[in-house]
Image (cartoon, rainbow, N blue to C red; front, side, top):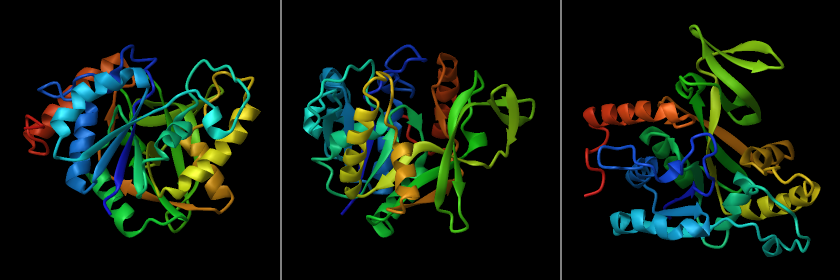
Length: 299
């Protein structure tokens, strides 16, 4: 059974100022998602499921359906605010979606095989998809999940601070905790994170999570149970979000599952700031010149 790629594409990009998930970056208007799907197909994934807002369905289908036909199975699920589907009768006022762990629940009725979750607007690189596909076909089980660990030095922006989940591991390379550093940046020839006005250096090779997770469908029930608790505990916080690392941390702390941190040397890139876009385009052009991708991705 080939694994499934679940793409988180429901969030609107607040800092970047447009719907960056469907913004063109390649020489023929290819999106970052296009390159992720291309890499996933090459790595052995059999299906892609987009998690989107329902109002964007026609937009996404017009972009992806025709070019992916015959190459990979495609499906769409919608992230919405309806809590009755989880047995919560109370009306809870929200100002934004419930977060990434809530988003993956949108796929619980159609994803029946091992799967991975990625952000729509992050460029992960083929090596990461290949390693994840191998893990999902040979190692994964209901108590053994994974996360791709990027070197922090290969994930930063030249145009401002970024937030990164720093992974701590045990001797076996399994995750012990993810510490969210909300202000990481380059300074001179070093990398630092700032907290309460104090700068602390980070090693270039420090593994970080870029939200590339590998699971089995057993994770859906666990996530749903946790979400119900989270939603009711945060009913007076309209911007509180239920993130995948919160769920991952719970699984690790309760010893219900372990997460293998799978290292990659790939350069990650994404568009945190508008000014990042030309750099991402130049990076993709460089990869095309090296032969990693054809100039026209979909023929």
